[in-house]
Picture 1 (cartoon, one colour):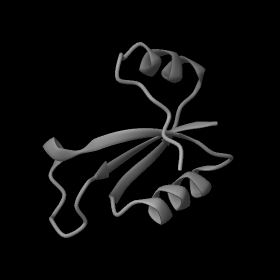
Picture 2: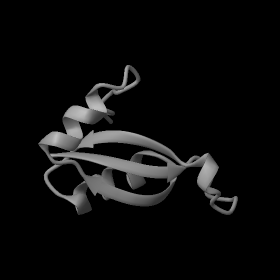
Picture 3: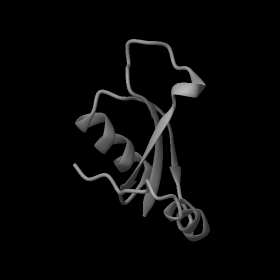
Picture 4: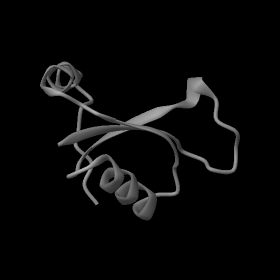
Length: 70
C-alpha cells in the first residue's frame, strides 16, 4: 500500500500549515509507515494517509512524485 505522510521538517518549532511537506512511502500498514518515517528521520509527523488507486493515480500526475525508500 502507498501512504502519503505529511510532516514538518523541524521538531523543535511549532507546526505551521504553510510549512507542511509530504512524502510517499510503501508499507503494509499505516502504523508501519509511521514507524519507518519516525525511525529514519527527525520529522514532526502530522498525518499519515493511505492512498487508494484513484488518489495514487492523481498524485502520480505531479512531476515531483517520488516514493521514498529508507
